[in-house]
Amino acid sequence: MANLSSSSPHIDAAAAVSAPMRIVAENVPDWEKLPLAVPCGRCGADLHSLTEPVCHSCGLEFVWDEVLPVEQLCCRFCSYHLMGLTERRCPECGERFDWAEVLSAARACLWTNNNLFEQQWSRKPFSSLFRSWRLAAFRPGKLWSKYSLQDEPQILPLLLFALMQWAVFAFGWQALAPLVTRAMNYFSGLEGSAIQFSYFFRGGQGPRSLPMFVGLWYGVTFICFQLYVQSKHLYRVRWQQILRVYVHSTAFAAWAMVLWLVVEAGIDLTLLLIPTIRPQINNNLYLNAGRIVLWLAILVTWLSIWLGYRRYLRVPHGWAVAGLSLWLAYLLTQLLQLYLPDVLIRLR
Ligand SMILES: [Zn+2]
Ligand SMILES: [Zn+2]
Image (cartoon, rainbow, N blue to C red; front, side):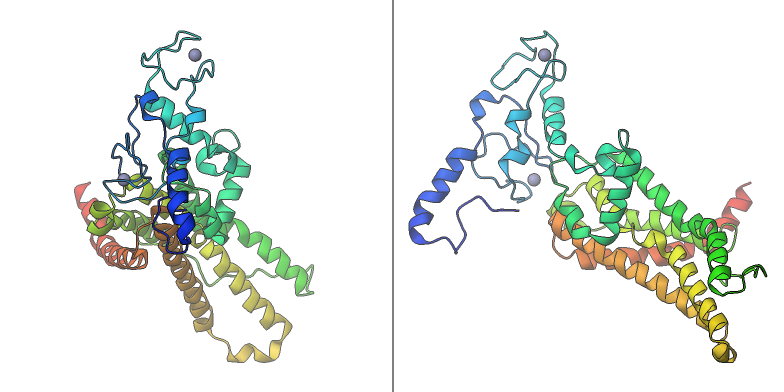
């Protein structure tokens, strides 16, 4: 984010004298006409009456237009521009208004054009989901340029997105398996003989299966993020914002089982087409291929969380927070899976 205050060493001496004054004069809101609290997007401290675009509480550098989009401060019934009013009633249509709601709507207005699931899930559920998933999985840098700390995370669509990712992880490969079998029959040239390929991976069933483990791990990791004093107290990041980072960071990993299936099908197809290498193959090859895919998924998740911490939350050391949270949660999840099913059975 551009630093609009004066301290850049790259500005030459002449510009350094005039530019900062001009920028401040143009961008600082006319506070006398704005009788409303202006919360910092990261920590919530009131930024009213500040002249420098830096939060006095958490140190966040911001852009005035994102924190206080003056042009968008309008009545939600008749769009009358409300700046300068001291009475909380619209002079045009007579409806009462609340400054906090007006400001929140004005900030949200700036981001609706991005067509991301979190903002457009009720209006364009499919296209916005596709776009969010694609950006989160493959272009996280671009994704974080479309979010600002100033727009409030929407919890319901974030939870829906997380749930869909888990469903794709747990059941996506089962939905794809018949299609892959068909494709393999076609490519193997044995059409009509209807070979049934069996996949090494089954995922297991019940409370100790891989999908259950991953689901539990997902939840426990999020709780572990809350332990970090560094991000929670020094930078005053809120749990809603950590949820936004986390939910988007697992978009690639959600496809791990599907990827495993495709890799396994690829190995099978190679064996079918080149029968001479078949005797050298054993089950370990399939298992190791699957392990590589899962480790790749964890690695991508870790890197994505790190990027989210840096680009969106603007908190350093995201790599350590992400790594330690994932690892600690992994251990806790193993403990939970060891004892939780027995505890539940005893409770019944
Ligand atoms: Zn702040
Ligand atoms: Zn009105």
